[in-house]
Length: 221
Image (cartoon, rainbow, N blue to C red):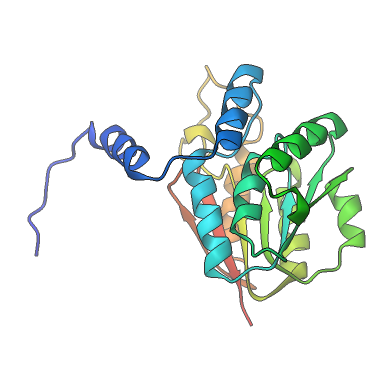
């Protein structure tokens, strides 16, 4: 049994830097998206969370995948890159202009042939996508997270994986009251969603403390 150690306040930052250093370098296209996102203040999945998504895609042997909320296409490059050559990822986003930027990035990443981009309100588009899918990723309008989750679970095969981003919500989910300097109107929605996600009757699920908090659920058979 290891001895109990005193908390080291510098450890999280040190561990993060260490892991960033030892992981393989990201592609040029992915680095470009990160720079654009920072420049334009576009919200994209954090790099460590995106690595996790790619690992889970491979782990569940996914061939068909669904993404709700694509933005600049950063997470899509990771998901599509983890699919086999004949894999297929369908990406939904309501912003046509941003999808065109995503298309360019996916082309540079050389995975555009595996990705289908659809523009419109996700809940409307999902009506034409019966599935089944092996993997689904949700990173979009927080108000609709509960509806997105139900739509994804309905379309997942047994043993399929659904992931959901931003479940720590910048640290707000763990606070008893919202930080007055960082008002977050969706904090109560995220807190409620987290409980329902972990209690979902069709999922074996957990929330991992990586990036901004990633929920992982496996559909029961």
